[in-house]
Amino acid sequence: MTSVEDVLEALYAQHNEVYRIQLARFDIPNDHALGIKIPALRAMAKFLRKEDNRHELAKALWNQKEHEAKLLATMIADEHKMTTSDMDAWTNDLYSWDLCDQLCSNLYKKIPFRLEQANKYIRSEQEFVIRCGIVIMIQDVVHNKKLEEQNIEQFLKLGLALVCNKYTMVKKGLSWLYRQIGKSNKKNYWLCMEYLQKINEHTCPQAQWIYKDAMSELNKKFELNKIKD
Image (cartoon, rainbow, N blue to C red; front, side, top):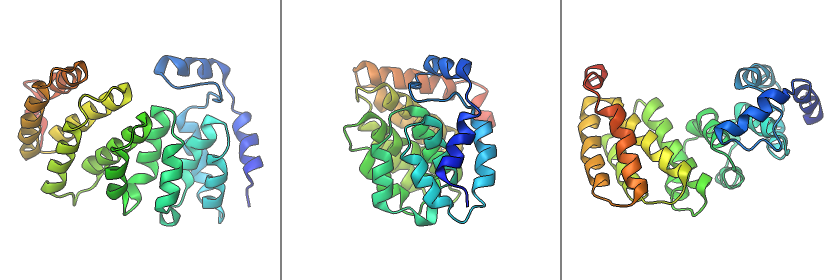
């Protein structure tokens, strides 16, 4: 079985100082980063997912200081073994938007009780915990083909309650959520437009930014023709 020490050795062997420095340009903390790109981590994950101890290995990697160790953990963890306590612990450890988004897209979107957790996270006072709740909802909009109309409207309402939140990564997450809902189908497009008008009624700068950013994509003349019925 592969040990955490084996994985860390393999990660350090791929250290790229130039890319590590560049991460700061994308608002990604790089103090504990090694500068390894996502495709290289996915190649490692493909191998590690075959290991019998992959979930234990994922938990051990998550507890390492290295940024890429945590990213790799999100790719190999077993969703069937994650508990609400595990989700809470990992979510509370978040410190960057990229780790948050990878955690949600690689792992959380597969967990059956994810929406209950998302509903809890968006009520947090921590920037990346709130963003995690938003990104879980985004993943459902994009990937859950059984998502019901009532869920969509609930997401829009939850987002509306956050439009004056002070955090940058919450603001950007909300624009992303509204854009994904608006592009999911034509019915959701018009429902999203209704909520964006409600957002526009708020005078706080965050709400105005969300409205303009989402509308810049959804209000294009050609965009509606691309959206399925």
